Each structure stands twice: as structure tokens, then as C-alpha cells.
Image (cartoon, rainbow, N blue to C red):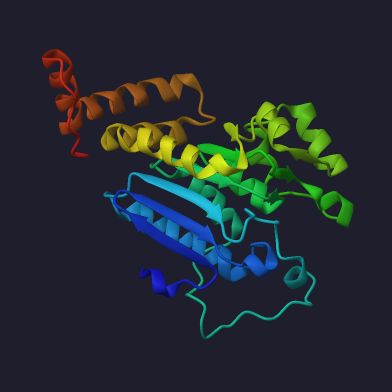
Length: 265
């Protein structure tokens, strides 16, 4: 998909890194149906492009995402522009599933607010780096709603009683508290957010693309499966990985005491 086809997001490419920007700053990047559908398209494009090694997810205008677009949910917002929208490919659950199952590392760059559905996006990424001033939370209960779809995603990273406090009280937490809960990987001063994200991305790009793809795909596959089923399949996948060009290069470089040159095969 050409980047110009998107209206609610921006997709930027720099060598092996794709940055997906939630781009409705006038609405604090609230998740509209069009934005969600465009995210599905963008993540499908990443999956099909083996030259992409890392995905960064962030928001425009100083905030990550304020959650679902309440005006549209209540029927008071502007209708979707059917003529401009991409063909429907999926909704919010499809975005979460694509993030959770993507075989490329994903990094959430979090500033401003990450609330409700926006917090679900953060929790679905492999890494999340937050600015010191960021606030995160699930305020839905205060509106008579409940964060139904993001509870399973949050439960994978937040202890049960801490999660109950978030979703039943609708509390917002600061960045340091979010890191303690597991919602953020790292917290940095606001002015150092870009440098911290760039540093992590550079470290990920330096790894074997083949190893990351095979490994992340295996981690997503084994989630929730019994060991009796998972271990034999993971052994098979390890042998398949050993047969790749990157694995041969990595082992050879180790024996020759040099830096490996990855080709992603």
C-alpha cells in the first residue's frame, strides 16, 4: 500500500525501519474506524515486506493515543468518508492480533496520553519506551464502559490485582508507575525520548533478521499451548532456523571471531 493512501495514519520508511504514526492530533489520535482499518493495512504491509526489520508505533502532536473516539462511538462525530476510506480489512481486535503475532520487533514510542484502546496498542508491542511526563490508564469505567478487548492484552503484562485497580477504578498512572506495572519497558526524560527509541531500534536492527522472525513467530505460536505440544514443535523450528543462511553466518563469524554480516535468509 502506498503511504499516500493513508489519511488517519502516516507510514514512514527509513532503511529497515517503518514508523507508523497515529495522525489525528486534533482528536489526540483517538481511534476512529478509519484509523483502525488503516493500521490493519499497514501491519499487513509490514508482514509481507521481509526488508522491514523493526516497526515503531507512535502518535502525532505530542500524544500517543487518547483511546477510542467517543464522539463517533456515541454517534455525534462526523461520519466516515466512505469515498476516501480504504476497503474494510479489520477492526480493533485485528490490530491487536496483528501486533501480538507480528514476526518483527515492535516499539511503542509513548508520549502524552496512552489511554484505553491506546494503552492496548502499547501493551501489544514488544517494547514500549515512555517519556517521563506520559500518563497511561483505562478510564472507561468512569464513562459507564469497560475496556473489554484490552483486558487480555493488559493481563499478559500487568499483575492481576494491579490490573483490577486500573480497570475497576479507572485510574491513570504516571510513566514510572507504568514501568513498574510492566506497561513500559523504559522511561526517559521527555527530551531524550527520540534518542532512546533510536538506540533500541539500532540494537534490534543489528540482530539477525531471520532469527528475530523465526523466534517471534515461535513465541506467538506457543503462547498458551501445553508443553507436551509446544516443545516438540519448538525443537523442529530450531532445526529449521539452524538451516538458515543467517544461522550459518552467525556460527561461522563466532568461530572466526568477527562480526556477522546478516542477510536475513
